[in-house]
Image 1 (cartoon, rainbow, N blue to C red):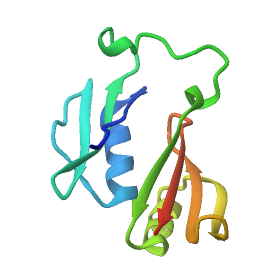
Image 2 (spheres, rainbow, N blue to C red; image 1 turned 135 degrees about the vertical axis):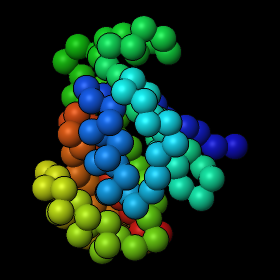
Image 3 (cartoon, rainbow, N blue to C red; image 1 turned 30 degrees about the vertical axis):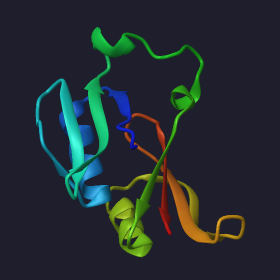
Amino acid sequence: MHSEPMIAVKDVPASARWYRQLLACENDHGRDDFDRLVADGRVLLMLHQLQAEEHGLTRPVRNAVGSGVLLWFYVDDLDAAYVRAKGLKAQIVVEPHDNPQTGWREFTLRDPDGYSVALAEV
């Protein structure tokens, strides 16, 4: 079993570039209204234009910060991902730290659309 989350974004190509750089991955659609971020043959995240009519993405939930979503990505090299995040001038919400409850290192940032994104090195 696996999941392929889809988020609504204002600018699909710009968001795809941002996530490609942050996650050191590729995209495989490259359309103005839809794209997928992939690595090792697996879909990490789908991006859809904000005003899409299909998939129930027509309107964000009112007054819901980031639509209540925290995207988690597990990476092999957290330090390299942090350097890429800083290169993107991303807003770092929680600096890299050891999480004693999970036993891994992690940090949290915001993407260009305001979604919270956590990266963890397991």
